[in-house]
Image (cartoon, rainbow, N blue to C red):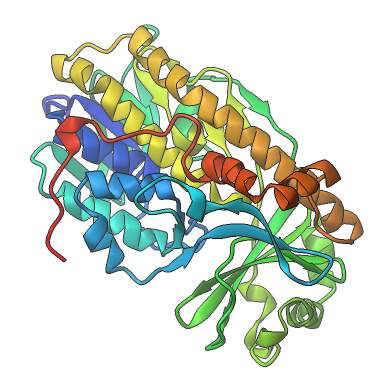
Length: 417
């Protein structure tokens, strides 16, 4: 990379999006369909990363319908999950949230590689003249005019560049550079666990579930994929080194005890294959300043439990496009416009934070002390006695309290199957 700085201020963009994850790609695609000239900067050269969440919830499946992309998505290898459950004292599944009860075209969530999902959206963007996706380009700092953000500096394969636009959307994740430079303060939410992330190659079939399983003090989540299982082991926060000292045989034994069907496949697992995911739960008190809006994980980082982060990010992207497209086309976006996005998304964000906090309260004591994962006794009694109530957590996790629809300008007819 050279030290040269190339100023692209003569290139007219209506919006710069930093980050090509679900929030950034969705916002960019929908804005482009609304006549907004947008550039999306993604620091990686491709979307292939194992730490990406793979759960696509009913709200996102409905969005794909509205965008005319569902049939193409259905061709991606995926698995369907119709409920969120725990194993009860009787050894049978106890349903916490029944997605099949939702009144939606696709009352289930899918487990599909997120890189395929993002590639699908990026490919759709190629058909829009106002959509410019730049891979391998990373925002390094904001450009300011007095107290207003007017663009970004970015590293590219050819050197540094500067881009300017009336609005910068920070969709650059939980470690957002744009949010930190803008000094938007964060409210930290409680989390006392971290996650070990690894895969086990296997031809065995596991249940289609994203619910945690506990056995002998070990807590795992197993995500089945074609030819392998993506595993998450929940460990006490800050205890990575201590657990590694126990050695690979301890981990292999823990996997085999929790998932006996994988007992013959764990020998290939090595400690170097195990990656640490630092679990953070937080929320920006304010998502914006003049010229800058944070969405997705940069505004509200969720833990991986429940797989909610992807779909919250997608809905943030939809709301951003729906509420800001007209202002961006006119070239004038006010802080009042940006505040509307935060207000629109706040109720669902708070509801999901509350529900995920309940999930953490069930699981964290088991991670630290062993035992059985159970909801509070009154909640379990209600859900067992009145199964129809399982639609409530399914609604919050699967659709959101204020689910987002694609604006009319983004709708397309689906391609024939």
